Length: 422
Image: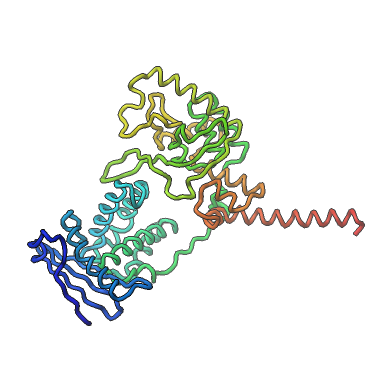
């Protein structure tokens, strides 16, 4: 292995720091640079820098040299990746801290996604592989983790979530030079076969059941929100994050831009309003006439409530909730959990039974597919990232629709044959 050593160039005014932290670049057999720096206090940092396509040798070396300076700047900010002996659990905390900082700066993952990863790490990764040093983690460790989760009765979807979260963590560790490979890549695949009873559309409500929900919610503050969920198929957070500036009642169109969610961070939870996760989630949707009428009525009622409450309208919020479409009677955002409880109560009053918000989304998808709409059309309405996602969720419904379509063709040909005397 050849060795290219140099003193970190760093900030010209930080001579002491450079003296304490000489950087080295070792060219590995695979052509990547193994960059290492010693930092004040005995800390060390290492990163593997790989050559980019079409990058010249000189450009490659300059980029590797720049990594040394970046390491020092990161140390000055108090951010130092742990050593190569850190455990999975310790690195998970480092990763979460880093991603939270990026999220708060308006970059990286959404707060709700970070909250999701925090729970997956805590419940499924740390108990099984958390104590393993990152470089010592093996494919067999991953297999044992998945086997343990399955034997405890966890669903295939949960096992897949644990594996995916670990894979993401290891991808970051590899970029930090802490592991050589992502061992989850070599673990066995998780097979998840849905029966008809387990498919999303099996949980969808029938149109008559939705009508009964409307009747039970009529005249209450939940009626326009229920109608938004049941007629547009939007996600719970998307409905609760709607602003009046996103709604054009004259043109009968609404634009989905943001989502309201309750996220967990550092052991506490709070409501968080943020842009939707993906570009495809940001979408315009037409408003049916009945929903336009309900929203007009609700806007008038909301204005009355605001006059009654006065200056305390929406008080206590960390962000401006003045423009939210759906609020409580004192102007605060509707908590997603409170919506879930309210729908469940309305469902029981309507004789439908337990109802949760995502059921209404499945109901919209079911109706669209049953009436012959294609996967791209359904994906556009639901805000899926691609038609493939829609097909993955609603494969059973599309299969049934295909059977009906073939029957339609046969009926048409038979009718034509009868008319012609065939």
